[in-house]
Each structure stands twice: as structure tokens, then as C-alpha cells.
Amino acid sequence: MKKADATVIVLASGRGERFIAAGGIGSKLQARLGEGTVLGHTLAAVRASGLPWHLEDAGHPGMGDSIAAGVRATPEANGWLILPGDLPLIRPATLRAVAEALAKGAAAVHPSHAGERGHPVGFSARSGPALSRLQGAQGAAEVLRGLRSQGGVLELALDDPGIVTDIDTPDALKQAEAMLSASTIADERPREEP
Image (cartoon, rainbow, N blue to C red):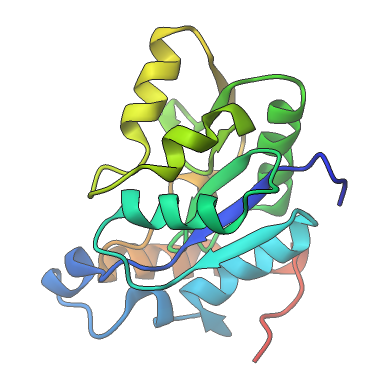
């Protein structure tokens, strides 16, 4: 980890309403996935990336509020990677790739897989004031739109289906389980801490 690395903000404040509405029971972040939980797998990838990170799990009313709280909690960061906690198959190398693109001067980085945009979305330190004022359910979409209109967003194509594999329904959880069983993702990161 270098001082110039961006900080990963793991968003874990949501209520998981879509998961419950689709028949899920309890918190999607605490749902079992392989030998751990959804959030446990996400955090294991973050730890394995070697990047600094912050878990934002204070129960904020919206994604924007969560992002703002995470940015305010890490004022020394040299940029931020916004990572929802329900992306358990994200690869550590993906987190590093987004951070490296920011370190090369991009104002923002939006990764994609097979043409579908995903997470983490990276923001340089210049976006700190705007991110720290976010509120509501839309997350950082408005900040990203503004940067995109100025040509400041690097679109980064990556070979990582984990950036678009979020756990919003029980069916998505089953698909993630199948993907985890069929891959070497689990071998790329340390085991989840109890």
C-alpha cells in the first residue's frame, strides 16, 4: 500500500429491500455464500487488494448519505473507490486496476465487464467536496454525470464479472454461489476472518 493509493469505501448501510421483497430472509450482506457471507467475501477481496479501506455500515437512509459519511471519515484519502458490500466476487486485481487508473490522473474511473458498467467507481480527491455533500438514494450518480459531461471519466473495460454480480435477490445469490464454486476466485484472497 502506497500513500498515494485511493481508499476503498465499502458500503454496507443498505436495508436490502429488493432482496427481502424477492423472498430473501434477513440481511443480504450476512447471507451465506460458500464458506462465508456476502459481505465477508467482499471484505476479503478488499483486504487482499492491499488498498486502504473503510467500512461504512452506520445505517444511513440512502447510498448518497453512506458515500458522504465514508468520504468524510477518510479525509486523508487520495481518492475513493466506491464499492457496494454486495459484490462478493470482485477480484482484488480489479480494485488495484481502478486505483492505478486514478493514480495516473483520471478524475473518475468507471469499470465495465462485457459492456456492462459496474463497481467500484473511482473518484479522485478533487471530487471529495462534492462526494461529502451527497444525500439520498442516487449515490454518486450526479457527481459522475458532471465529470462525464466534462470528459473526465475513464471507462475501464475489465475481465471481471464480479464488478456486475451484485446480490439483490435470492436468485442472484444462487448464481454467485455457482460462479464461486466454478472459479478460482476463492483462491485469490485470504479466508474470511471470523
